[in-house]
Structures are given as structure tokens and as C-alpha cells.
Picture 1 (cartoon, rainbow, N blue to C red):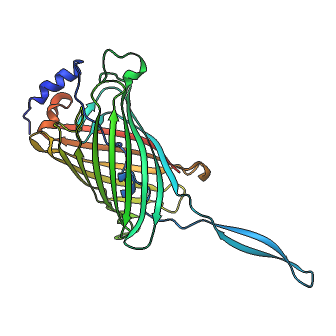
Picture 2 (picture 1 turned 135 degrees about the horizontal axis):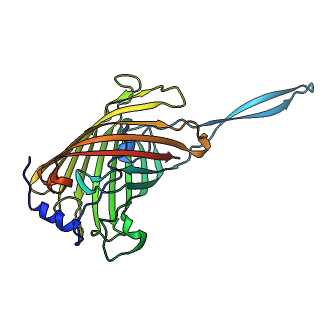
Picture 3 (picture 1 turned 90 degrees about the horizontal axis):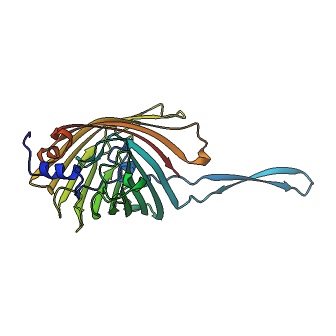
Length: 334
């Protein structure tokens, strides 16, 4: 696995300031994925009970006596939800392909979800979603040298609509379409479509524990710049995240997990099938001191060790098969 390829020459040209052909990223590679919902980008698959409001009325009897009568009124849950956040990383690493490795990497994201169906049959929930994901860097190596100003640090902006379907209570399938542009002009625009199947096994084996298996399948649509190393490729990503939540009844439940992800491709990694194997711990904790009226804030941190394949290592810093990804994320759900 220590051999190089013609892609080494290509990377040298890219970093020298020619027109680079780099690769777009799915919503954050370094973000913590402790649940299937978080990993797919879809809202929580659990259908929450409606909040109840107690209304007191004064009742006067025929004898003139007064007493309080309580009436419980169920409050309808909003069909609109969303999330916002930003991740800070040491690399822009998309499916084992390292686009940026210099400076600090900032990846803001946001999504809105519209719940269009709830039910108790085979299909339990259907949600539409629309979101964005972006990449900004303190270093402007991946940009058009003819550009000037802060736009040179704005590497990428992705627009991501999709649909999510929960079925059999614990399965969730999300279909996403991604179309990206590059404000910094470092590489061309592109597009892909991706299906994500997750299974929420929370509390099945042990309370507060789950494995959260996940499978992603991506196909590259015709683009100026492919997401992989060659056009019209297929990408396959099975992953599993054994995780346990400590202090689950406190204001600060701490979720600790160990993620293992395998990146495989058909043409996606050129002539190689193996793109990478990534393993690493991740933790997340809600910021319980923030009032609930301001949404649910979560702080997350993670580390991933990458063992790259031949073609991904050939364009990695130092052509090294071993890479390290560190991430710190702050997210808001509402």
C-alpha cells in the first residue's frame, strides 16, 4: 500500500496554484455521530409526545361555593425544526480525500426540517429538509490566485435538499442531493446524490447504549469536478459507533462513542476499491446551563485515525497512509 500513482503529479500541480480538481465534502466528516439521526443529518427519528398545558378555571356552584377545575390541553408540536452549527478541524477530509491540510478549517452548516407525516403503520414519519454546508479556511492555498480579499478563504458552499423516511420505528432512510459551488474558485462545481440507511438500536441491548449501524451509498452526477478521484463513481460507506451515555438523568449527559468507518468505491477511488479505514473516539455533551427556550446546544469533540488506500495516500500530505483528524463542534437544535 506504499505505492504512488499519477495522482501525485496532479496534487503537485494543484498546490502549485494551477486549476485544482479537488473534491466536495458531505456534511461534516469530523462531526460527532453518536446517533443515526445525527449521522444522516435527519431530525430525530423518535416521535415525541405532545406537551401538555394545564389551564385552571374557577367554577361556582349553585350554593355559591368556588373551586378550581384543571383542564389539560395538549399543545401541538411544531412541524418545523432545524439545526445550526460549526465544526473546527485540522483538515478538510472528505471520504479519505484530503482537500486542505493547512491552517484552521471552519465548517458551518444549517438545516431546516418539515415534518409532513406521522403514523403508526409501516411508515412512521416523513420529513423534507433543506440545508447548507460550507468550508472556510485560514489558509487560502485552495483558491484561485487571481481572486482577492476574504473570498479566497471561502473554499466551498453546498446546497443540500432531501427527504427522510422513518419506518418500522427504528429504521431511517434519507435521500440527499448535493450541489456545490466554490466561491474561492479553487475547483469546479459539482453534484451528487446519496442514500443513507440507519438503524436506531438505542436501549435494545443495554440502557443508554447503542451501536448505531449506518450505511451510505453515493453516486456522482455529471459535474465539472467529481467528488471522488474519477467521474461517474460509486461510493460505499458502512460505519458503526458503539456509544454509551453517562449521567443520563442529569443536566449534562455525556455521550462517549468509538466510531469505525470504511470507505470503498467503484471508480470513486480510481482503480482502487479501498479508500480508507477510519477509527476514533468521540464525545458530546449538551450545554444544560443554556435555557431550553434558546434551543438545545451540544458541544462535541472527536478524533479519527485514517489508514488511507494507495490512491488517497498518493494525494495526501507527505503521501502518508496515516492521517489524523481532530474536530471540535458546537451545534444548536431547535
